[in-house]
Length: 345
Ligand code: KG4
Ligand code: ZN
Image (tube, protein in one colour):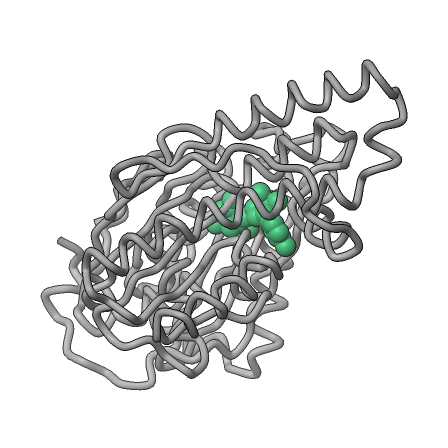
């Protein structure tokens, strides 16, 4: 228990500095009374040339960027930095070397300013991104969290009370987009580019949609079927990918999106919950957003889709979780360390 927990009493309008360094985005935000005043994200572009995030390169880049990004977040928020009452950071899950930079910075800041330290689960933060701006989902709601590292259906009972109903057994949905893109020669991360090119094509090619009996996902089969399909077609016509790129992107996107929403529909049916949200980097996908709206109309759900800037990794969402933990006086000690596999709940 932190020394601040014992002396804590509820102070409204708390100003929190939040830090996010779990993967390849260095981000800092100022959150006041649960409202995001500033949210600065610096994405590390150097990973593009390697075709994926290189952990060692990512942690070194976080070290270089953390101080300027924090300064920019404070400046953009218009607050006086002496009024910051707590510092929050992503404890995990994520890349250990990347997390370490954010954790170390937050610990040093909290120690120097003698303010509480708040650890945040990155996946809970993606879910609570929905409380950055209205309309807010009502509890309980289901949240499909789809990112480069995770694919989960989460039942959210309250701000800090969530449980996983289903998750991927192998690749994450974002990984499936990125790996399929790589097979077609697209740069990393391929997800946003597939989304863009798909809008110019039609889903004329079909790939098997895995429909697991429970609420879990598996994307490795889709990846293998795309690999063999491309191999076969390229043997007949070496220019197959170039000539059909837009249709291929539309087809791959359709398969992944339908697979995602099939299990969400099942989860909604099983739980009787009609408040449905999507979160994480892949929730920026336009086809996923459209199909979710269509399913919402058909099933009489209320669907919640955050702003694109709040879908991908950002410290604003970390600050929102921290706000609710601050209200409860749930603080960490200085001996807290990052956790690459930090489980939700
Ligand atoms: O949540 P996020 O920013 O970082 C992680 O925590 O992983 O998600 C990044 C993932 C990448 O795999 C990227 O390709 C995917 O989200 N992504 C998209 C789109 N925008 C980002 N996938 C499909 N369509 C998009 N528009
Ligand atoms: Zn994320």
